[in-house]
Image 1 (cartoon, rainbow, N blue to C red):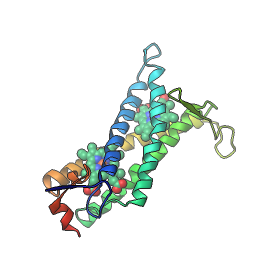
Image 2: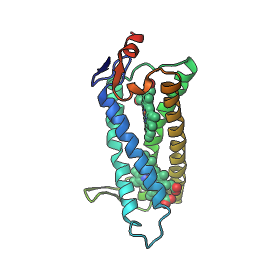
Image 3: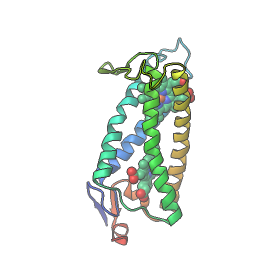
Image 4: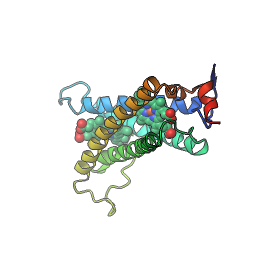
Length: 197
Ligand code: HEM
Ligand code: HEM
């Protein structure tokens, strides 16, 4: 028997949160792939301009599901974690770190682009101005390089965390057999949903 519900419960993710999780997985992997690919392109490549345009636009727009997800998570907390005290502690910090990394990746990407006063153009739909340009609070000197350095290492950190997180999720599901992968698909086997009532 499998239960589904749209809101998170004490034991299971609802499908609304599960949808956001997987949407953002695809989105982030696309951003990472596009980011790594675009920095390798030479000037005459047909995607030399378009790839970074798409990367910046998709990157900035990721802020929308990120905000929705954090709000949703706050209004409707996720289920209690399964596993030992140590694995619950690690999972909690990895999950928090994901949110922190996403926020700082968007911020550093924004700063690389706007460091010299240019605005971020989002798919020819709208522009985000260079709010910090010329402000004493963030001096422009070297800002582009510094933000670029942070952006690259935050992205590499995110890749490392994704590998760790996916390996832990697969281990829990297939080796420990706790059915946790079902939870993040918004489907809750009754034995799992009944276990921690
Ligand atoms: C871009 C990649 C990914 C990111 C950023 C990500 C992020 C997260 C976050 C933040 C949570 C905790 C939800 C919360 O409490 O807010 C979570 C839960 C979960 N994720 Fe991912 N995830 C990613 C990829 C994956 C992949 C590839 C898998 C499967 C192989 C996976 C499986 C799970 C599972 C099973 C949970 C639920 C853990 C539990 O509470 O039992 N995730 N993910
Ligand atoms: C979570 C969101 C994002 C992820 C995961 C991401 C990922 C990446 C990756 C993997 C690279 C290649 C780094 C390298 O090897 O040098 C990159 C480069 C870059 N990203 Fe992002 N990015 C994100 C958001 C953004 C945003 C919002 C912007 C701008 C508004 C942006 C602008 C750039 C630029 C300009 C570069 C090229 C930097 C250089 O030439 O050194 N990114 N990004």
